Image 1 (spheres, one colour):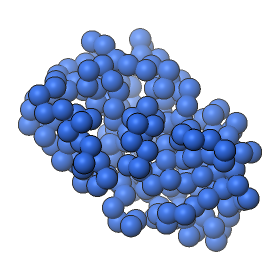
Image 2 (cartoon, rainbow, N blue to C red):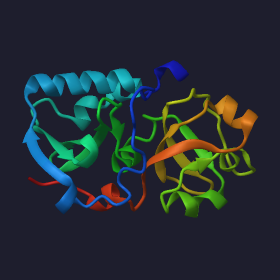
Image 3 (tube, helix red, strand yellow):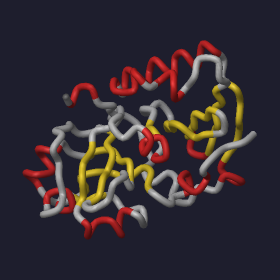
Image 4 (spheres, rainbow, N blue to C red):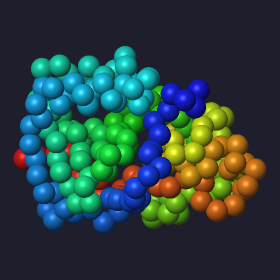
Length: 200
């Protein structure tokens, strides 16, 4: 149901395509181990935002494993366990899984599928236009509201190529069928994907 999906707060500025030109050597400003109370809070918030994570959360963030917080440009924070980049958030926005984590646990986000023609644009960092989600080859089987974190699948591809935030509900994407339907925040081969792992 739409109400179980993670939503972005509508107030304040939320920078999209935040990793398009991400350079770890220049854009990382801090790397610190989180206190156990902070880790408990992060895990609780993740399960609240993404209920399907509940059965996996202790595998993703083991109870006795140190959790590090990597602070980056534009007030972005990354959650790191055993050098693996797991989630990121900007300011007081929601935690968003990395694509590498999503590929391991593909059911944690609702999925929308674009047609083949949209793939090359998404992989260059473009937002997803409504017609790319409504044309033959595209699918929106899971109804979601606006400001929802979603996985973007592609016609003929097995794994998600992008994570985005809906600008419109799936109902309005179909009805209006023009303009931006989903804002891209993380995509294959962007700076975060190329970073792969993190070290102090």
